[in-house]
Image 1 (spheres, helix red, strand yellow):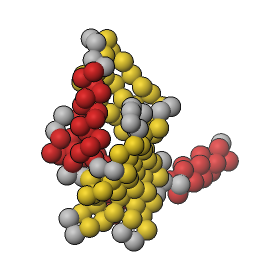
Image 2 (tube, one colour):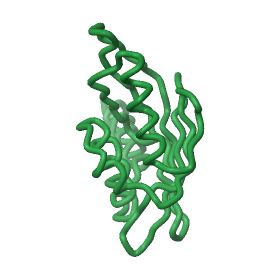
Image 3 (cartoon, one colour):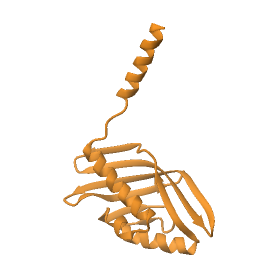
Image 4 (cartoon, helix red, strand yellow):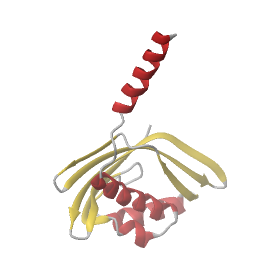
Length: 151
């Protein structure tokens, strides 16, 4: 019994060592990512665009598939959604796989899902990944590049 207790304690301690505490910078980076997604989910273009740098390289699944500004992407997304009967878009973020920060740059990889209505039918894209690059400016962390990769 004593050996079982020792093994159990070692397993708990080892598991605890593998969990890194989130730093204040990681928290700030993820706050920007969450604001971007939250703005999209609420159809709040001002909140969404406030998270982006002046130039933001974007790759996404709908044509023309590449943009150099969040505002251009958002305009094209809205046009594509209207044309394809897509409404009530909702992005859900999983736990980040990576939040790597070096100086004033951050690299973030987050598993995602996208739920929406298409012509009144509920749809769901699961297993996608949102990968972002952010840069810290006097205004805070801003997204300078991102890509949506379908699962």
